[in-house]
Length: 427
Ligand code: IMP
Image (cartoon, rainbow, N blue to C red; front, side, top):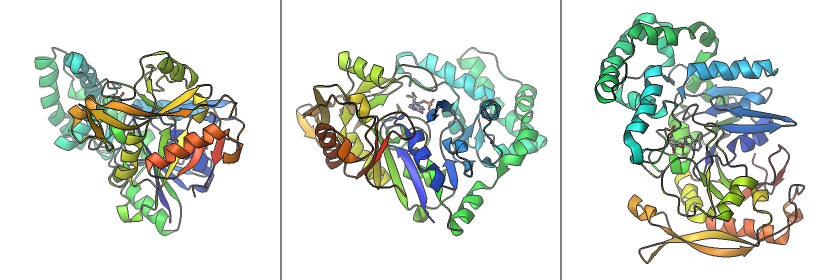
């Protein structure tokens, strides 16, 4: 009964979709347990490229049941846009299951996300503007709207009324915007109810029963460890639990049933949005990584900030999540560099830190301590075993592994499904 969590070990966009897809045929259920359409998976199958924001990437694997868990916040328009888009390309989405307890992103929360960011000015988070933060805030404030509310108009109306009492005050009095009417919000949400009904169930029960039968469940995180609301670089984080603990609360699978935690880590580092990033490069090397790695956001199209591999972060992610295996992605992007720096520690005001500083202000001032490894020039995209990698690339992987504190089991050497070196099979 394996329950495997896949989590991002940096600031997102590590290539989780590819790893999920790699496990696809041995997996019965793929679960999205946090976040919403702020995520972006790109999965390449043959000549076809699929950019998914809300649906779990397992939706592309025949025979696999994709599940949107209770920890997710759902934008219904986006959900059906993605379903319709996939159907038009011949992908069957009828197996999708959606938790009755997942929260819904209402129009007023999309609006609030955008105006709050504008209001914050230089203190903005750089959110994706999809209404994620305000929807999770409503959940914690106990004024959220859940999927199950959409099937009883009286209940829905009451909840929308309650939420708007507060939201309209904020929108009109603080931000000088127009408020929303209860009718418009209720109509917007209920228009999806009939199409939604066949997908909705108690996904926690469904998944635990699947584990009882000995089936394999893959829990796929949105965002990543350093964007986790508890363990990330707060306040420059997303509003959900993107770590292995979140896989349990966001799915209803208990911690005692998790059998494996796979951390996805890029061979260098990227970040979108604001917030500290010690190994960030503002020079030609940063541009090199952005161009070679095509580092532009799947969701917002924003150029990603790029920097060298940071083993302090990888070690931290291994610890917070209990990583059993790392998948090191995009090693091919580093091809052609004379030297490849790896951050092994930080220096903060003259003091060396081998672990993540607990104090965020220290992290803001952290100066990376680098070790310089020799680069390689050979095209590695054809390598399918570790031994086929150039000696310097092997040494780079081995050093990253040593510093990160967990085995690097899989290495990505290109964007395609098969452009992968498997050192140790994941399941
Ligand atoms: P939010 O999730 O839209 O509230 O944005 C909060 C922070 O998380 C911002 O810095 C976003 O850029 C970042 N973020 C959200 N989703 C992703 C993702 O899928 N990849 C990388 N960064 C993300």
